[in-house]
Length: 412
Image 1 (tube, rainbow, N blue to C red):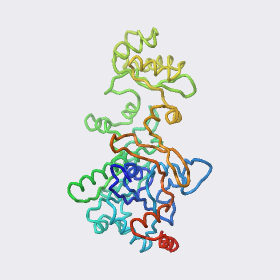
Image 2: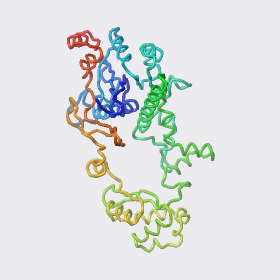
Image 3: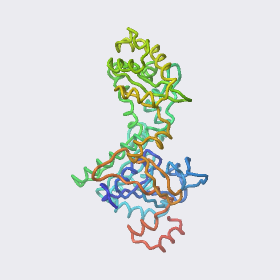
C-alpha cells in the first residue's frame, strides 16, 4: 500500500455519507480503512448498501451505488458484537489501529462497551472520532437526527425559499458532505497532534454545527445588523445582494427546453462590454449605465436579458461573453458535466473502480491533486464481510478454517 497516509489504520464504523465520506478521503490517500459491519442486521448500519442508484437490473445488499461511491478503497469485515468472541476480535483490531471512527447516535459505542475510556484502555494513544447530529454534550445530545432535521435545526431550511413561498428544505443532504469534510480534517489534525506529542484524543463532532458554516453571511447579518426575518431570507435567496451590487446577475433562459445560462456583470466595465456583444438599443438606456441604476431596475433589466438569451444557444452565449471578459457559463446538466465536459475528464474526477459484485463502475473522485502524494481510487467498496479472511488472517493470524468456523458460529 502506498500513499501519504499509508502508515495509518482506521477501525471504521461510519455509514451513509457524513461518516463514510470522511474515511473515503483517508483510504484514497493510502490509509488502511477497515469497515466493521453487522452480519445479522445486514445493511441496517448503512442503509445505502442496498439502495438506488444501481448499475443495472440487479438488486441486493452489495449493489447500492451510493454505498459503493462512499466506500471505495476500504476493507470490510463483519462482527456480531452481541457475541463475546466478536468483541474480543474488535478489541484486538483496536489495539492495532490508529483511529476509531463512527457516526452513530451519541452513546452507541459506549453501550457496546467501546466508548472512549474503553478504547483508551486498549490503546492509550488511540484517536476516537465521533460524528453525530448534535455531538455528545449539550441539551440536544440524546436526540437523533436525519438530513431534514439537521437542515431545520441548523437554519438552512429557513433560507431555502423563494419569494412568497414557504421554506422548502434542500433536496439533498449537503450537510452530510460538510460533516464528512470536517470529520476528515479532524482525523488528520488529531493524527498531527499525536505525531507531535504521542497523545491520542476524543474528537467530538456535531453535524448540525458543521451545517452552520454553510450560511456564515446570514449569521453575520443577524449578529451585526439584526436582520433575519423571512423577508430577509427571500432577499438573500435571490440573485440580488445588498453586499454585491451587480446587475445583471442571474440565470437566464436559453434556446431549447429547460436550457439556461449564468451571466454576471461585476461592474460598469462589464456592462459596457455586454452592450457591445448584445448590440441592442436597450443596452444604451441612460439609467442602466451605472451599477446603481441597474440594481434599482433589475426586474426590467432581467426581462430584457431574458428576451436576448432565450433565442440563443447557451454555449454560444457563454462563449461570446467570456471572450469579452464577462463571467458567464452554460448551466450544465449532469450528463454534460460528467460525459461531455473535457475539463472533468482531464481532472480525473470520475475514476472507474472494480467492484467485486457490481463490476466496473464510475465513482466520485476527489477534487484535489497532490504533485507528490496524490490520491488513488481503483477498488470499489467492500461487499458485506468480503475481507473477513484477509483482515483476520493478516492482523490476527487466523487461518481460513478458523474464519470459516467463526462464521458458522455466528461470530462473523
